[in-house]
View (tube, helix red, strand yellow):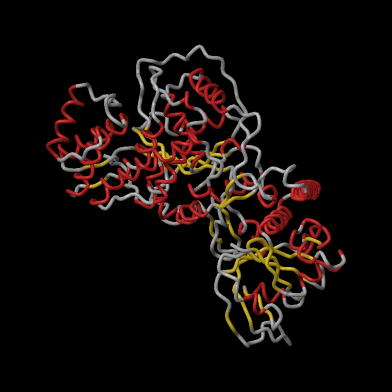
Length: 577
């Protein structure tokens, strides 16, 4: 994605808004050919010397000789969608942001007062990414932040840029080896939280849950926290009443975050309840997800969790279609990773606030799911995008609270930021971390070969998320343990939460996949129906344990044994049955 500054004559701007089309004559035509759908454009009104809004290109450039505005011949055009349209009283003065724009450095040979003029005289000018980030933040902040807070934010940006410029001017011996561009964007994407001991914080979290009388396995809580950090979309599965809806609320309370529980209804067949709709009066009514995303963006110092209770009463691919798509398009942003705007349709100018809402770095989505036949099965589109953690009742006879002091521990919002969203973005890996990633990638690749003949092969998304999960888990290794204090391998959990839930079907291919994967998780060899039956018989004889201690991946193998038992009994190999 490229950012652009487009000089739009003030008398043409209203017509451009109505038509959803920006246009120019000769100046800027060559640059226009470089604009691509998805690029961001900031409208600058040269006569008023203000930035009036942020827009997104939604198509390739085209030619149209009809008049866009009276008396104006502007045949070279581009369709745009408003991201944030500012009312006139909130237009951003040029002088308020000019000092923060790196693009002006390209014209350092000119007098300071003429540098901005040199940029806008080209009509359409590309902006460095850091400039686009600054302008996007300022434009959107004007819509919902008071002036004092806005000026403070702009001053913080100015200070960060000044420090980056100072670092870039130091001699190579005095400066760190990182290039100035990396220093300038240090606040974009992953930033390790200062003075945050994740391992100690996880132990306090486990103690807090125990003190309240909740009996979750330590590894299950650690897996939930790690999964939500790795990918802000987690499914908690299990029988009714096992604590699926309660876990996200408890974790939010114990870590200083917030949570909202949204009951899903069977009649959710479109995004009206989640994204919003336009009422009969033409007014946009934002949905629950849009409101939650906006609230989280306005409160960036805490992590926010939106819980979809009994998520599979409806079909998530219907009522969460935009979210499922946007969550895969997250990119580095101040404070972590955020998505493009959630809404795709164009709203009226008065609803520009909602038009600009994205999935912010501080919002996680959690769905609870009953593992039975009472609701819809999940599609591959949903399962491929989520971690699925199954909760079970530990010991129904254990009901008393543990003697652990209860304490709320405020986690910084950055504690929930992943180190990356794709393996290719990782930098600075230690030798041990590189070995951990290589081990995970190797295991996922092998499992993918076992699943491929059944049509359940593994893609890059699953590979990357499994590896990132294991990498994040290494920051609090002690929390990955069972009730007997025995360690639980995060790679075992990564396979259990990313691969096993996709097994669901009555076809022979699904059964073969379950048999083969069971053998592979046990000792690395594939298994047929006869081998699988023997393994399951031994598992039943041992009392159906949740882990097979001698297996390569004990918990994944035990869960597969339960699936294979169903396949042998009734011909259906399903995680969800």
